[in-house]
Length: 296
Image (cartoon, rainbow, N blue to C red):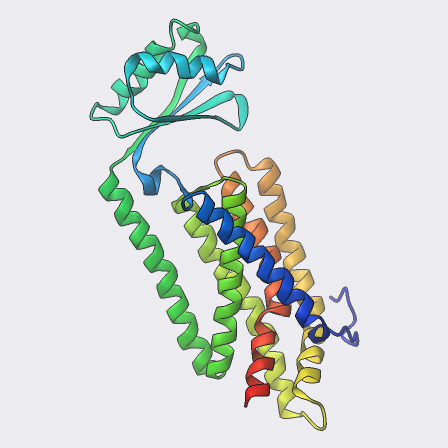
């Protein structure tokens, strides 16, 4: 099945300066947001602390909740809506009390402001700072090991320059997605690490398809320049790229809008990652190959 003819002749490499400028600006804005925010907003998985999710029968006033919590001296706390206006998420510093006691203590503290019967404790979770630090390190190592494996595989299947081009494209995808999370003030959790690993695999698969076609066309190069071969290869695989991305996006968009709050950030990461991964397999990975060929 084809949605675009393989005989198309879009000049993708002619747009290198424009796409590099756009990608550079997007990455700089994302990194600037992370720097100004003092780093990523880690979830309880990484930062440690106690998380309490409450559900009210009617939408509460967050400032009233904040006043109610002052009576039990829980330290610094963050209060925000979680999905609907009736669901409230409270993050506090790590407490030495048992989880059930913390939840009951918070619920009782709000009894003077609300009817306790209207408040339901949905969940209470706790992670220590040492566990959070260990989880951060293991998450980073999992991404590092994935990248090392990619370099080895692509260097074996193609050549070293192809591996470097693929890693540059993957770094581009990860930085753009991280920037989107920082700008929108979304939490970075273990679930998002899983989403990033999925993005890496998806983007890499798309990039390898283009690389494979470039290698095939190089064997019958003729009088064509390297840039012409890359343009032809991208055009020949464009239908497959758009079909794969389009069908995957349909599923991810459905998850994003109808999957519920629990997987909302996960599906958001996939949504951004798939769009950016499709873009990078066309514009970013091939640019380094052009640069490598011109230097050689």
